Length: 174
Image (cartoon, rainbow, N blue to C red):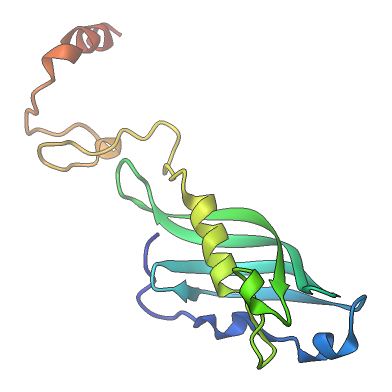
């Protein structure tokens, strides 16, 4: 994922104090809404935005986090490297263990802080794993001179692989 160089918010907004839910006991819940502009989740994941509702429910095992979030991912076309922004929707449902944090990858520390950043990071990486194209018929870059073939043909005279010569002939006929 492309890195935002400035103007981003740190991941502190994803650290939620859930002490009031832990004290209330099982059966209680709290709903919150995220609407955060550019933010850095981790060193390798930056988001253009994070939006959506989140429900925190107290269970006897800890806090169940559920929500449908929209992530704005700043990315690059994997064929021509043109910067693009995509909106992805991720559904999250994860149990943050409390009081015994050793049983789960996601847990709540003694300070009653629940950190959503690792969960959002994992979901963003999974959602972005397919890569993206700037347009469905992106032509990519010339392997010789690096010109973006979406802007037109290049004049470098890049050789056609002999295995594809017959295909080029068919293309030239059309």
